[in-house]
Image (cartoon, rainbow, N blue to C red; front, side, top):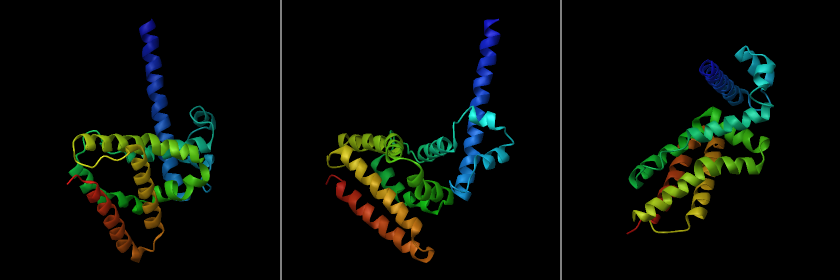
Amino acid sequence: MSLAISHKQNEKIIQGEETKKAILKIAKKLFGKKGYNGTSIEDILGELKMTKGALYHHFSNKREIFFEVCKIINQAETRNWETMTWKEFKQSLNHLWDLADDPDFVQIWIKDCFSVLSSDEIFSLDEDYVIKPFQKFLERMCKEKQIVSLPSFEEAHLLVGLVNQGLWLLSTTEKKERPKTRQNLNKIILSYVNFRELR
């Protein structure tokens, strides 16, 4: 009897997780298309054909959904820092700026994020999914004698800030000027990365 109950409970947990994923997938699409202020709980419910009760079982309000969507965005951009080589890291730098061409990313992370979430919430997202893994990567590169040793905590924060500002700049630049701006950003970041290498 207890096995049957635990199996049912397990099915319920899986079903709940699937429902949560579906809510966040639709919310991400709507927040990206219409913005945070232009998207209502009713819009999300309408797309999902879901009752308010079912949605509020997983999230207490629209802001909480938005935070979880921002978390998904950050998780998606987490690189394989544990196995990445210095050469692979350098090769990946050019693709950093691709996010500025992603309308969902620009609307959610560049335009809406800073007006919806608190600075502590934004910092925690960057810290958990980007800064800490990148800091560990820098420390590993120092141990492998790929780069000169510098304070990794401060350097990770500085570089993530640089990339965030670069993405903001690129996403707000006129389309015809973007290739030049992207080229300049690449030049700056590659100059810094080359400077970091052990000679």
